[in-house]
Every structure is written in structure tokens, then in C-alpha cells.
Length: 404
Image (cartoon, rainbow, N blue to C red; front, side):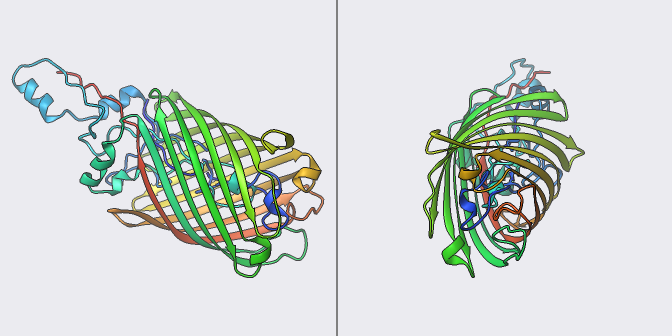
């Protein structure tokens, strides 16, 4: 089975930002754009002409037989058929597919960290955008296809400004601020089989606060490795099981935070809806330790459902994530709590030959059950606007064309 991938590293929701927050709970991860992750979803981009899956593209996994049937015969195949030959040529793994839509891209959705709150650093993954090759001229795509056939990679760089209404996530007296964020994210992997992938991921983000620079501005780095395996439920539905292990490092202005070690198992189901949309649901766990598994800090569960719709060049994404947290209150900085994160995003590709999109994203955050613990309480609303550049290469497998 072939699948598409991108970065991420879903969307993707909890940890307080600022003095209180950088050490709390499940550090944020990409919920929506974030979510994911990278949510690790495999999806196939069938939209070279604007007909299919999404930017955080809806990619719908397809079965191996579907992939073969969708490939059109090459000129060599037609020549053999017309001359009475019966041989069926096999596509060279090192060569790009003749049809720009094929082969079905394999790509592991990378959690794309979009928030620095707990959900920022926990790869909740929304089905990611499809391979960016569909937006390149063919000669540019061919350059990348010269890389090893089964190797895949995906990279994004997001620059955004956001308005945040409760930066300290307190029950009373919310403080508002404007934040500039730059977020590069890179995933490189290898497809062991059509269904199984291994990869490594690196992302970092810089949050620069306008009014509370000395309190909240920070750099956070994540280095990790993951393995994913796809299961085909039916021709429209695919399930992906994944295991992601990572290390988080912090550079905070006015405090020191030990590195955090996370182990994150996940189960994601994606179902294609028509030619333009996909529904998804995911369950993700996160176990967190301080100083490389020396002190257990907490355990968190993420439950997400969402929908992605693409009408080229537009992409619409909605997501609802429920997060529950429990653990050592002294290490995580507060009581056990629950969080609802709602996400809505509208994105538009700026030019058909340039893989850059402009987006607007709204993210209401509802904290509950923490007994007014600063950093884990109250209501916070985030409004983003910015640009996101993306590029990716799928894993490519030989495709056998049946002779007629």
C-alpha cells in the first residue's frame, strides 16, 4: 500500500506558556497544522488538477492494487502491445513516475508543532498536506526523485503572528500579548515496505513575545525517531499505528528546565470522503520523564477528531482535541487537568508553482479541573496568521503494469 506524508509534526495541547508553562504538562505540539504530528497520518494526494486531498492535504492511503490500476501504461508498454509483445515492463525505482499523480506518495505525517503549549509539543496529527511535488514544475520534481527510491522526507517552515488572550493560562486576570513564531520542521525516513516506515524528526520553534519578552520568550527543540505501520480497513479507510520517542530541550530567558523524554504511541484512522475531503480520528498517549527517564513526570492522553477539505487552491481544516493529564503535581507544576482544544484553519496556496500557503487559524482553548492552578486553568484564545512553506518527497516503489 502506498501512502502520502508530510510534515508536521498535528497537529496538533496543553502546557502553560511562560514562566509557568514551559515545564508543565504535555508540552504543546502541533495540534493542527498541528496535530500532528505529526497524528501520524498516511494520505495520498490525488489533486494534481485540484481534484483531491488536502494541503495539510488530504492524502488518502490506497491499496497496492488500487495504486497499480491507477497508473497509465507507459509509451514503451503501448509500443510492445501494438507490436504483439507480451512483456510487461517494470518501472525503475529510481525514476520518477510518468504520471504526475503516481505513484501514490508515502509519507508519514509529521507532527507539525504549532503551539508551544502542551499541545504544541505533543504531536497531535491532522492528516497532513500532500506531497508538494504537485505544485512544482516537473523538472524540479525530477531532481528530488533522483534520491534513493524508498527514502522520503518532508519539511515545512512556518512563520506566524498570533494574538493570545491569556498567555499565563490563569483562572482570573488574563493577560493578552502578541507573539511572533518561526517553526522549521524536518522529517527524513525510509520505507521498509509499502506499509511500514521508519523516520527521524527534528523541529524547533522560537516564540518572541511583544510585551513579556523577558518572561515568556523561548526556544524549544525536539529530536526523535518513530516507526509507523499502515492497515487497510477498506478501499476508503486506513489505520496507522505508530510509536514516537523524542527528547525535548529548552532555552528559557529566566529559568532552567531539564530535558524531557517522551514516549508517544498513537493510532490514527483516516477515511476519504469524496474526492476532496477526509475524516480522521486519533488516540494518542504520552509518557514523560525528566532527564532521560530518570524521573517520571506525567502521562497524557489525546483524543482527536477532524475533517480536512481541499478545493484547490484552498484548504479548510477543523479539529477537536480532548486532552487529559495526570502525574506528579510537583514536577508538572499543578494539579491533574483536562483541556478542550478547538481548531479551525483556512489556507490558500499563493501560486501554483510555489509551495507556499498563507493561512489564518483560530484556536480556542478550554482548561478544566486544575483547581485554578496558574498555567493550567482558564480560557485562552489564539488567533494566528502567517505563511507556511513546504516541500516533500514520497517513497517510490516499482509499479508492475499488466500486459493486455
